[in-house]
Every structure is written in structure tokens, then in C-alpha cells.
Length: 157
Image (spheres, rainbow, N blue to C red):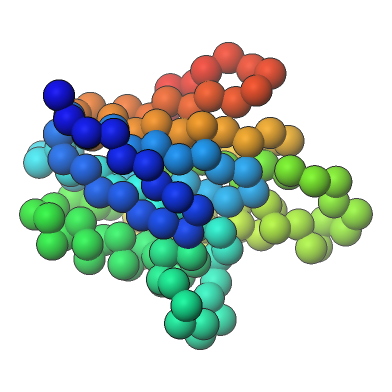
């Protein structure tokens, strides 16, 4: 039996077969990468898409967090050639948005999709948007992601 690893806001977790990674996201986005061959999974909980050259925390932003997660997973034995697909979840509108142009959630969806594409990573499953937060659990034995959100049935990615 593996360990349960909590991934905090602007944080990252990496687990090997048997470990379960989990986080809770609102307007943030959880990005999960998986090396199926070695059963190594990584999850990053990004707050915003672009760091705009801020140096405070690479896992807070998708533009710095995605390459950082890949690098850290490779240090655990994962192959960068096998980290070419992602599952993503989150970006719920947690508050009423008066101007769609200032929606953090919509911006996060656009930025994460754009940045994964730039890294040649295909999104193979996603659960994005809506108006509620989600609890996201990632099983490194199978690559399966379970999402629990208030007011709807659980979802498996």
C-alpha cells in the first residue's frame, strides 16, 4: 500500500505505484502527468497561467510549473518521452464574475491548454469550468483520476 500525498495550492507532488495524490481546486487547475511504463505520477496545483517573470514559486504558475514538474518527475526516473499526455481539472468560477475578460478561471483554462500544447503535451481528459470546487485524486498505480464536486456525480478521468 502506498502513501497519500496532499498537493497544496501552488504545490506539487510526485508518487510511485501505489501512491495517491490529491488536491482541492476552485479557480486553480490541477495538472496530472503520468509515466505509465514506470507508474510514476505527478500533480501540480497551479494558481495562474503565467508568472510574468516572478521568481517566487515555480509551481504557482503553469508556464514555470509544467517544465518544473517534468524535470522533477524525470529525477524520479520518469522519461520525458512518456510524459506527453495530461489530465486536467478545475477552473471553476467560484465567485460571480462581472467582466468575463477578468475571469481567472477562464484565463487559467486558456493558458493551461496553450502551455501544454507548447510543451507538446496532449490533454487526454479534462473536467473544467462550472461553479464549484473539486476534490481531485490521482492513483499512480493506474493513472486514474477521480473527481468529486458538490451537486453532481463523481467523475473518473
